[in-house]
Amino acid sequence: MSLLLNGAKTMTIAGTEMQCLEIYTGEAYTFPITFTDADGNAANALYPNAWTLGATAKFYTVDNVTYPDADNVVLGNINLDDPQPDNTNYTLQTAFTNAQIGTAYLYIGSDITGNGTGNATPTVSLANSAANSTLVIVTLEVTRESSANASLDDINREPLGFIVRYQ
Image 1 (spheres, helix red, strand yellow):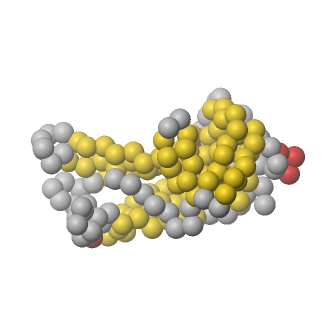
Image 2 (spheres, one colour):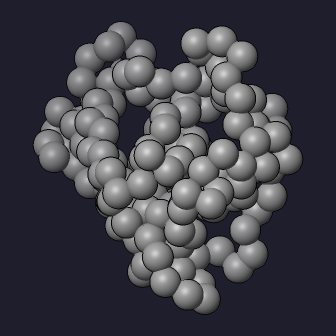
């Protein structure tokens, strides 16, 4: 499974190429998703058993972000935030809008950069707008019954990179 977002750039982290979009502080996005088979026909996410969707996020601090050309992003010195934010402090949702024809959405809430103290999501401020950007890796997880063995689940995880910047 691969996921392509309109207007996205690509970035490679630890050898994994992913789509990258910039999300500015306070903005929210709903990304439409359409699942298709190898022939491009709509996939029925109800058959043989209903597929399930999930989304998770990991937060990183990046000391600098550069754009060598229109299609690439170079991230310098990426560090996993510790502790990670509690997922009750931000909005990240995914669901099927019509599972029979394989349409769904992924919603990234305006509170993905959050605020607060302790284990809250990072706050992006003017003081760290040029450096120490927040990188959010959102992973979309799709679970469905295996076509080879109905007692097993196939699980696909698609990482999406979001550079959160102060606007």
